[in-house]
Image (cartoon, rainbow, N blue to C red; front, top):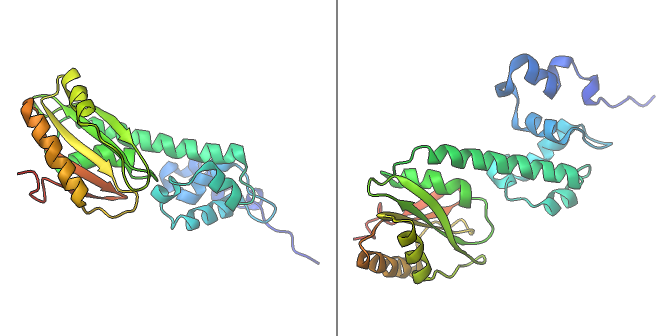
Length: 232
């Protein structure tokens, strides 16, 4: 006789994600169990937790990698994930990204490349295209606002010096941190990056705005022009 396959409802109550959360707290749940709560059900072959484990495994058990998946990626690669479930996963990851960004802005004052990285990492680390941002600071190096200047393709984006200067002047910034990402994962500054940084630094100096740093975000790593002595 063929043995009936266990589903989540057949598990001991303390092993079910929702019940486990209620009894032991949110910290007791694994990433797969949290994901299972979001999707609610699996498919005819897998429980929600098993399906969630497979989704995470495909992303190397890395939530940042999972955050790079599109709705179509999830639907096409995982049986049991339809449009509604895929949207739920993407929305939850985006909320997590925004929470991390909000927490980084609470620091307010920028005193190192690490502080700048904490602000830009949630914005840029998951993108599959390049974007250029500027972090506007007041005369105490406290954050006014991070602003996206441009976005492009996989290999680059165009930065208009006039636009970035006008943005800083309109907000009465006294200092800025420049930032862009490398979707390739290579954090090293290219010759073009170095040339652009020098050009922008000269332009900002002309209007008495200090360029404190230029940060390149590459996944979970970054390159700082200041830390590497490239802003002298």
